[in-house]
Image (tube, rainbow, N blue to C red; front, side):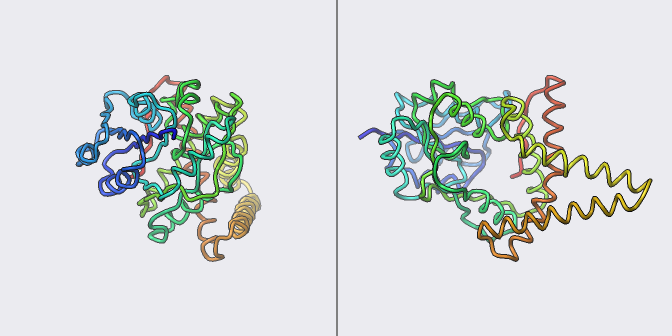
Length: 319
């Protein structure tokens, strides 16, 4: 049977990492944990279950992509690699199902599954994360960082781009698709995630990071995140500018802008209900999704300022 190796990445995940390590113990041939400057017992906990620990040099800007690359490089003769974030636990049975499916489809470079929140109802922000994770099964263009990949394909593509601080998984998947490989989301639960996002400020920072990803991956692949970037420019920039102009010219312009935002909010809420969210949750989440264009714009602007200045692409943390 073709062995599967597991790479986990994290920093100061504490009990979340312990649970994640326990969920893969006994299923993987090799387990590598890549640590990014933890000050807790993460490294000791990983060593205690027999995982190989890689400590990243924190004098070099940290990115999740860089950590996954380091984890892959630490494996001995990998064939199939399952990447999991350190705040996730692997659902029993997924590893075998995913490996069997990948091996049965030689044209597939990657398979993934469904992620869900462990503490979904701990906050509105956790609920929103849980909704984001549940995308339809089938052939996909991209997925998140929890993924099972053929080692040969990872090597062929040179792994992830370590300079991409957000949506690095989208960027990697885009290159995989362009290389002719098929990506598929299987209709099985894959991992359970602990976002631990309890405050508005955390959500705002995460939305900034998302905007940075829109801009950076869109810069590398102009045909990707096109719709997302347009929405940010319209609702995060153009409409606020028009509203400001209206304050000094005619209040009718302000009312028009307000009506456009209201229409967008109602359409977003209706879309969430079509995704089977309860009505009350849909209308609450629609507030965040409508507002998100502002922090998205900040993230996009930050990327382009960094790019023009030749500055390092440093991560935007929300935990």
